[in-house]
Length: 253
Ligand code: GRF
Image 1 (cartoon, rainbow, N blue to C red):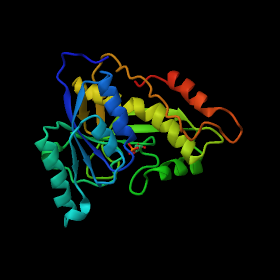
Image 2: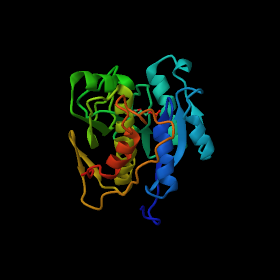
Image 3: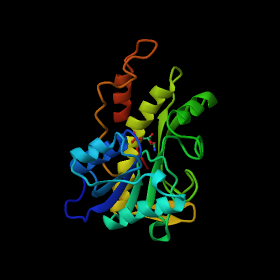
Image 4: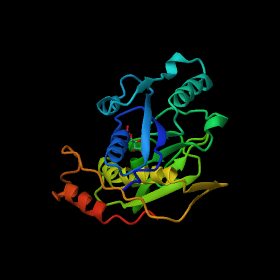
């Protein structure tokens, strides 16, 4: 449970697609689990489906489209100008698919989540199901997610938190995606934001140090009814497996 008297960390959340991460963060804020406040949602396209969650939560929305700028630098400047205008201290990439040039004023204040254990299956071209396909093709036994600071390389900045999930023998990219997202990402991203809100995160070179204290208490998400892995090829009820293992998921740190 967050501290009611603590100042809320002001965030800008950047989205490009379905907005599941945005929805999860909004839920954690509404349940008072993290001391954060979303000042603005910036979408890279007006058709980004995640915009609906910002509308429902009455959060200001800005659309900044790459096509309206001649250069990537000009586009990035426009995005960060909006972040400044709304008073965001941290910029949270949530399924955001554009490469940004981070200005000096936001260095060390942009974070992202990637659906693998970096440095595996990351970098240019590794997004969406491609990440999980690569993990399955390689035959890894565990996967997970990585919350990291963003620098000017794809998935390149210092690692804040990682959370691991098992890979099962009959996994498909979809079932692995669902497990990584609901079991790992929905807990690790808000937890990392809460650590930032508590001022417990510092960076020394490539290493992120977390000052001692309570582990943030983040409740697992409610699984959507249409979760694709309700029944596996063998007929097992995998959604039940997923629920169970959320409860039994290892501690974050
Ligand atoms: C997640 O897999 C996350 O790791 C990556 O984008 C996906 C979430 O996108 N950065 P969205 O929130 O559903 O749009």
